Length: 634
Ligand SMILES: Nc1ncnc2c1ncn2[C@@H]1O[C@H](COP(=O)(O)OS(=O)(=O)O)[C@@H](OP(=O)(O)O)[C@H]1O
Ligand SMILES: Nc1ncnc2c1ncn2[C@@H]1O[C@H](COP(=O)(O)OP(=O)(O)O)[C@@H](O)[C@H]1O
Image (tube, rainbow, N blue to C red; front, side, top):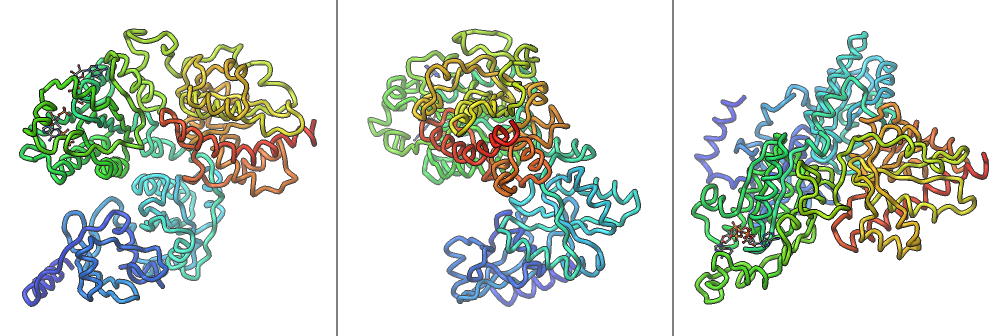
């Protein structure tokens, strides 16, 4: 009880100096909760030899614990949760003080011993994603069930709250038909299969643990919950973060982007400009390394909160340090937003030539110490979504690079707004997605050739990853070159564009002819294209969700490329072609991060080569098995 704890706390503080306090990361807080409840047994503390359950303390505190002292772990609001102490080789033991008292669905976070007692005699199942029709049917068959929703950091496909809402909805549905079904929240962070099995066993005790059929689209009853939890990219909260030297053009481009966004309408917008923030949120901070870091973290924290609520934040500080930029990226990810990094890569000489505020001249004269680029470092980002050198370019032209990249990534479509073609080359003018494709294109003779399988590859803009897949897949056909027909489209596909120039060079270097490259034209995905294909293979899970929103009934034939490769590898080798697809549709591998083919667009040649290698590896597994149909079932 809180009063008793407070009382104990006072006694201890009177007799001993207060313990140093530390607030663990979200993942560590999940681990702490399970450790405190005995849910990880035989793992009982942090940092035990060979255990993945690690607590990272700042050096001074780690030394304190290693020397036999103790540290108090507190939640983000400062409530003491536990002490860790120990040292020696056996790890750090945890002494619980209290556990979190509130938070959404707190009542579902039960101790394993209570769960074993309360739900004795039931079947146990685990979920990490919204349940599919097949899984719901399975639940109905099982009778009385306890559903363990694994909601710890990095484990579920949805947010913890999203997964619990979706699972409770299904539980209500099934319970209404008579079965007893209860949901338990288990804050198990991603630590690998062994620990997961151990934790589940601790909750289930001697009751049977039943695996639900993997994969598939969420059942219609929870589709709304899933959509709200995992909005499509163009509705997701977004942080557009410009970084670059003073005078590189960050504020100018950010302002021009804001204007476009305002003209376009439909999103709530916040500007966090470097100079403006320094006059308000960060007033009083200097340009020391520590103060710059504080400044950027503040901007990042505010921007992340904006993204949490679905807004768009446009930030334009110098942000010279990679580590701080990564922290901001993490804040935004933790808030469920998307982070889009623009490196305004105008070289120092040009920034200094512009010297709009006369600061470079002063810095050169030594009047401003620690000036970025002159006497203080700027660490070039290696992870920018787009890199723009503004030298010798108009603002509109430079901004276009940002807009094309934003659209390519599926976040915002501002390329073809109310002022079409303004300052833009004709081949960059694009149509909005969703425009129905002409029927002639759908029928497209070769694609629908009778007897041969038609495979549709899908990515975002249909100018980089999916064209690579389409043009490259033939190379893995060994016997009959007509056994399988390959095509591609984009969830936000450009209309009638060629292959991205970097990816085109990679394709050329891998033996695809100039002629084939030249004949490729990009296009947006349509429901008809999905329906006409025997199999749809997407670059990323988000594309798969997009396809399923367009054509929910197609779910047995829509996979990420990586997921299909893994499913195929598990299916008996005698199954090929259409049979293989049908089989995989019922026994699909669960999608994992390793299955994603990330977007190399605008990230340079090395990133394109890397994506190409990944795709080649997957096509090598998939294509010969699909082509098997040409041999066994001509
Ligand atoms: N020592 C030093 N180094 C760099 N910049 C300096 C410095 N002193 C003042 N200024 C002016 O402050 C603006 C940069 O502030 P930021 O908040 O964006 O910088 S940081 O991200 O915290 O490093 C920057 O504005 P921008 O030109 O808009 O980038 C400068 O005008
Ligand atoms: N293509 C371009 N994009 C952005 N700025 C440009 C471009 N060409 C010239 N400039 C000029 O460069 C300067 C950039 O200043 P600013 O946007 O304040 O940079 P920062 O915010 O990075 O310090 C402005 O005077 C702007 O007019």
